[in-house]
Length: 166
Image (cartoon, rainbow, N blue to C red):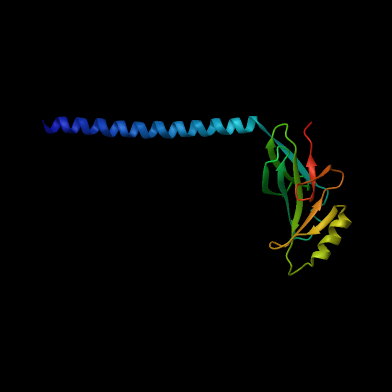
């Protein structure tokens, strides 16, 4: 066997390996796009807006919403953070399975160096939120219910806001 033959075989092996790696990468990307498309087709977004004006709230407050569970009894416990929109309102959205209701509960994190939990509760009541409750442990958190939205009790007996699919 000549040196020329080894060079040709070596080039063919390297070319085969590189084309296999490239095909694997392309198939992985296509598979990821397919899964993303299926997830998007089988889910929808539920938008939540807070009635609070950003100017009236203390600067160190951070609002969030906990996606507690779906009506199919799947516990989620995923946090979504509120963002300030262009029109000044605070919004967040929860992506959930299409045609499946779910429970969610809003909260505000605060800095205990500047606020006592009872001050936060008083502020929430003044802003029109219902049933503010001090959370246990860290972070320093006060939970509340959005007024005018349906509610339901979870398996632990806690009252949460509830979305019923149309």
